[in-house]
Image 1 (cartoon, rainbow, N blue to C red):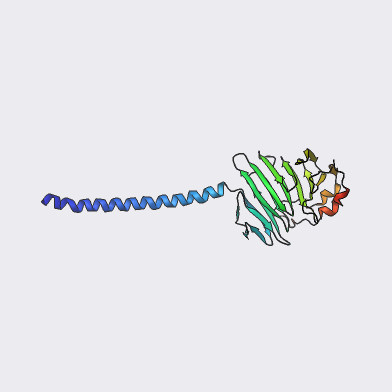
Image 2: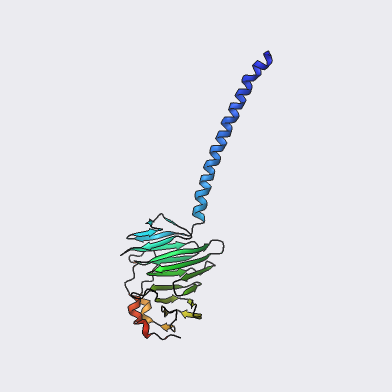
Length: 239
């Protein structure tokens, strides 16, 4: 009995020490889990904001320079606003004022990105050094990009009319009414509300658009009204 009474305090000490060690390990593991969680969120994010002018929203909330862009995010700009995004898939996007787009699909491993242009206009550029695909979809057409730079805009009056032109490389454009056509550098097309695509035309004025995607540039805004440059969509030569 005397031996047992001496052993009991020792066992109590060992148990308390074990509990302290256990709690210390658990706190460490919780901190590690939080670090891994936030690190993985950044690694697998679709992209980041390179430049922000004026007021813009992400999923209805205020967009900031520190905002992380992920799949299914909707980015919207207000009047006199502009957003420049860089996606880890190698795509750069300049969203003009009064515009909205959705990062619909993003697959980091294969660098495949699908953008839904919901309203307004945007400039798109795909880095040819980064393997993968960038597709842009509107209500009336789809566009496939591989190492190129182009501009897409909805019409001013007819919300389903889409205008697009290519600055570098080539883009395939398709609708559910016909097979895809290729639009080459310096050319542009119009896709009307009936999903008909006009014949590609060489448009010298496209060189005057502000194609800059450099966040350090003094001016990133585009003042040209693409629908005015194209003229009346009803006069376009459709196939």
